[in-house]
Each structure stands twice: as structure tokens, then as C-alpha cells.
Length: 254
Image: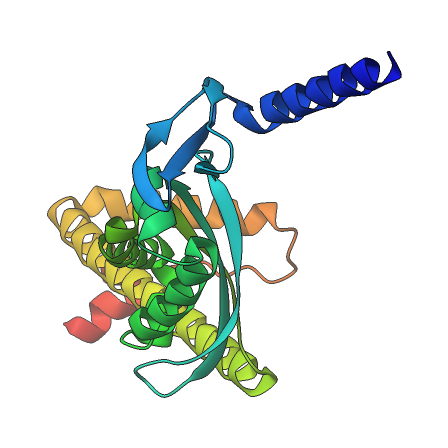
């Protein structure tokens, strides 16, 4: 009797172990790459998966977007400026079969490829382009990575350059350059203002020359402004043609 119980218990344990090794449940974002006797036989999931123990093995593949931080890379720009650049890489698996079979470790392979591509692309541009045209550089790097990882079943969705670190000497040089640029713009704006003011003065002089009475109105306006300033000195503009009507000037002329 005891022997029968042991036999039934052994059979129950074997069945439980068989079911535990045969039944797999994959989530919505997971896929299973199935190998039968070492040969690829298909991709299954999500849901309930039944495997033949010992004969079949399954390797899971996560289809969600993965994030990798590209460590700081030493880059020398085209104008020979050394900088340190780091970035963030976003990618996902679009073909589980190729991601598992074509490359041993797609995470490490994608990371190393991103570092190499980042140094290669940024080294072809000047420092000003790195600082001002990040969006275009991100697009160029993403396109190159996407082409090279396509054979692995990997889709690079986005790569973003995070920081571009400069040494203190370059920071001071860029600050001086920016200050000089601001002074240049200020001088140009001042010169343009002087030019426009001179053009308006010439236009005003032509208008006043056409109407002599307008000059008298300008005299009165100037006197009004001087009186409003509470100054002890008053400058009174005297028209030259008014002096011609004085008695002394009239006798001297005759």
C-alpha cells in the first residue's frame, strides 16, 4: 500500500514538473523565440505558450522602447576644439527573430554603435554647429544608427544629445566672442540710427525751406522748451532778415 502511494506521488510530481516546464505565459509586450532541438521554429506570443520539455527552448524578447545613456565621449570638432558629449538613445525590437539570432547581445551592440556614430558624426562639424544645430545632428545620428541596426531587427526611434562640455579656456573664449558680437551689433544699430536721423533732418530742412513761416514756428517752439526747463540763461534766436529792418543797418547799407 505504501508503495502505491509513493508511486502516485512520484507520478504527480513528474506531471507537475512537466506542466511547469511546458507552460509559459507571455505578456502583451513580450514575444518568445522558439528553438526546437536548437533550430529556430518560430516566434510565439503573447498569451499562453506550451513547449515540449527538453526538446524546445524559448528566449524572451521585450518589444517596449528601451533607453540607454550613451556615456560621455571625447570628440574633437572640425575646428579642433576638444569637447565631451553625452546622449540618450531610445530604441525597440521590431523583429525578435533577428534580434536574438543575428547578434549575441543587441543591447551592448547598439550602445557601442551609438558611441562610435556619435564621435564620427560630431567630429565632422564645428563647435558652433554642435551648439546651435542639435536637432539636425540628432536626425543625422538617428538615420545612420537606424540603417546599421536594421539588420539586427532594431529600430532606433530617437537619440538626443544631452550635454556638450567645454573646458574653462573655451568657455572664456566663447564669452569674449559673444561680448564682441554684442558690441558690434550695438555699434551697427547706433550708426543706423545716426544715418536715419541725418536723413530725417535733411528732409525737415527741405520742408522748412519751402515755407519760411515754418522757421518762425520752430523758434517759438524752442523758446517754449527753454522756458519750461527753468534755466537762468535764455538763448533767443534772431532771424537774419529781421536785422535788415533796423535803422542802423539801413543807414550802413545806403
